[in-house]
Amino acid sequence: MERETGAREGLKGWLNPSKIGKFGIERLAWLLMRLTGLGLLAYFIGHIYETSHILDGKAVWDKSLEMTQTTEGHLFLALVIGMCVFHTGNGIRLMIAQMGYGVGKAERPDYPYKPQSINMKGKACIYATLGMAALAMWYGMAVMFA
Amino acid sequence: MMVLRESIIMKIHYGTALGALFLTVIHIMMRLTQDFHESLEYENVIANYESVGYAILLELLLILISVHGFNGLRVILLEMNQGPTYEKLVTIGCLAGMAALIGYGSRTIIMTNMGML
Amino acid sequence: MATIHPKLSDELSQTVVSSTKSVKIKIKRSNPNVNSEQKFDEFVVPIEKWTTVLDVLLDVKSHLDHSVGVRYSCRQASCGSCGMKINGKPGLACFTKISELDSDTVTVEPMDNYPVVRDLAVNMDRMINNHKKVMPYVIREDSEIDAESGIREFLQSPENVDKYIQFSSCIKCGLCNSACPTMAMDKTFVGPQALAQAYRYIADDRDKGKNKRLKVIDESHGIWRCHFAGSCSQVCPKGVDPAMGIQLLRGYLLGIRD
Image (cartoon, rainbow over all chains, first blue to last red; front, side):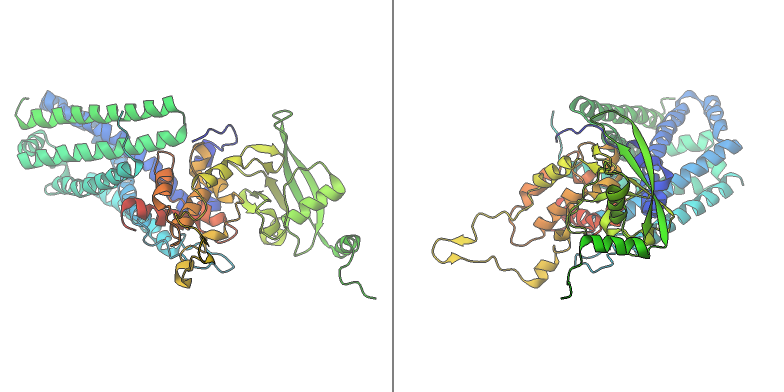
């Protein structure tokens, strides 16, 4: 593809909160999907490193485990749970939509034009996913702080 | 360099997501079969790794999440900047990161499973 | 004898006399060919309840500052020339009434993700090039011109027309590309406008160019860089719903649709 210079919004087009206000919950879901994906990959790399301490014996394992057994550690893990649930739920919604389901049926548009692909089903899924992520975080904290 | 069509890569992305989801649920359920803190105790974790079935599950999970995660990273990086050299570097970098993570994680799984502690 | 079409000057004077309200319009000014300076110029213009953003801009050009750069033509949301960012959201100036903005101040800026020519006019070459790349025409081996019987038609049922007619309403205003978050960073992304047009022709049962088009869009900066943020569909002034077209188009590449 041919190159074009200048005129891109850049990261502002991704991160500017006013975009969410103007383009709705779908834009928030798009941003969160990206951020949770990066967060989960970072966590996964850390998790693989942390679990590798099992090879160094019980003392090292217990010491590395201590990091996550603090209040901050538990809160961090709760955040990971929330990211995981959101990324999964929203990912399933996207997969279904990207297969062409739930995005409406092509037809003659009538004024005032309401895009069928931006519908209540999709919005409900996003809100439900956010709700499930919050619930999972709460449950995770209940287990970890028990 | 052989280049997969993007639709094939995305099919792999979706497939690894579903596979990882299924295995992650099992992995987390295993933590909840006993008290959470107890399940993370050294002896219990070793017992998990020494079970061949669980070790295979962990290995599969490692591969699926690494492939999915690094492909996701590749997608984000490709959208952040463009250019033939940059794109080649991103692809090679992500493949290398994926291979390194799988290699490092596999080492833990295999050595623990075989009792090489 | 009564005049059916009043003179332009009569219309203008009537508009001014009957105005009781006004709006402050902030216009982003820049001329990249001269320097990199960017500034907002403010003007106060009388409005009626039917006054559009384009009307206000033309009022500014006529009476306050002739140098404001704006592209427009049909004034009825048919030509797609007057796309711009209105209070932060891409829209057609001729299709956006001041009264519906619910604000005493209206800020207009050039569309994001396009190089600025001057003030509110942007260069749309990239979008047009991408549009051409998806081959926006019916591809067939045979022709509507038949050697023996003369001209014939490629017949199509109304049901099949409904499958793509929505996407043929595209006026190439470029608002969708301006709203798209991928376009904000990816200089080489084919964009929602071109992808929706690829679907329009693939869904047309007279067309036989599906595989050619799928090959064009199935690359690293093609259809898979859309992540269904849906912003393109929210700003489309013609009800095209590019996000829907793109998701339906993916079905062909995933093997769900023939």
